[in-house]
Image (cartoon, rainbow, N blue to C red):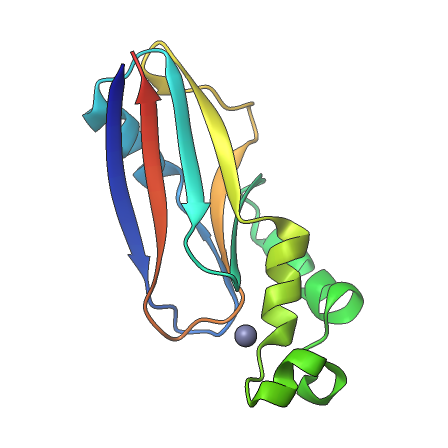
Length: 139
Ligand code: ZN
């Protein structure tokens, strides 16, 4: 079995951002030499997400709006976590809602995604250095 590990680093301009990382994941699959297997893509933080969805900027805005208005408004006084002096409880809840990792199948040496599927990093508390692990395993 082959195994290949790579880290992507982020330091977003906005506190919340959605970033398409599909090409970076595909490049690591190519580098791994794995023809049949899986790529695990996982945010190494408790206030970020990795998810699969559509490369469409209107939808990214919808996701951010949905998280802000329906899931977890950025309203520090409303959360107990922020009694510790932090203000990012909403980012933790957004990470839980969207999820922190995905596993993408590899077939014939390529990411085997559906037609409209792309892999995204969701930053919910950015403007500082954070990272994602990509682990490719297979044969
Ligand atoms: Zn926190």
